[in-house]
Image 1: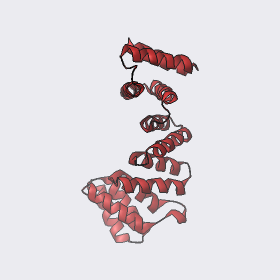
Image 2: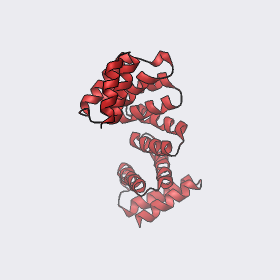
Image 3: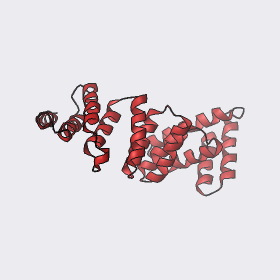
Image 4: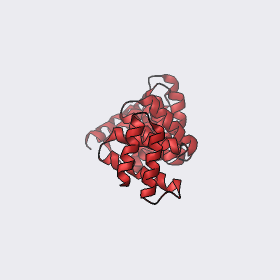
Length: 212
């Protein structure tokens, strides 16, 4: 069956046999009658990645992503999935490389920019990370990115990256989007007020957060 060939392909790849892995993929394609369109094959097998993640078979999911990227190295969605998996396993440097490929191949990928920005900041590359966080905000200013960027600008240990006024603007937008009902967002807003020296508002907002 086709799934058996997919499993064989992953096994070949994991054991350093990429040529055999690709041939196994082609066998899977023939069984699924997808041999006329490689793109259809990649799409079909990419769906297997999601199934493996759902089954918490992360190592196999990583192997399949890497295998598919040997066949189609310019597929942004594959780079993104692999980056998320690698970051989950603690390999942040490798994750950054694949997040970078994601946004290079798909500059309009807001979550890719957000994830890349956060990963870069976590590795001490704050200036570059902020560029990607701000790009994510331009593309899709959702509450998560607003909150994460506001927290960074309000609390960063390096004064050159602390921007209290901008942090307040972002945190207030995040608070509005979440209907003032998310404790984490209200905590960020309180921190931003405190960073700007608006201590009465900071106390009031922190107390509201405690009640959520």
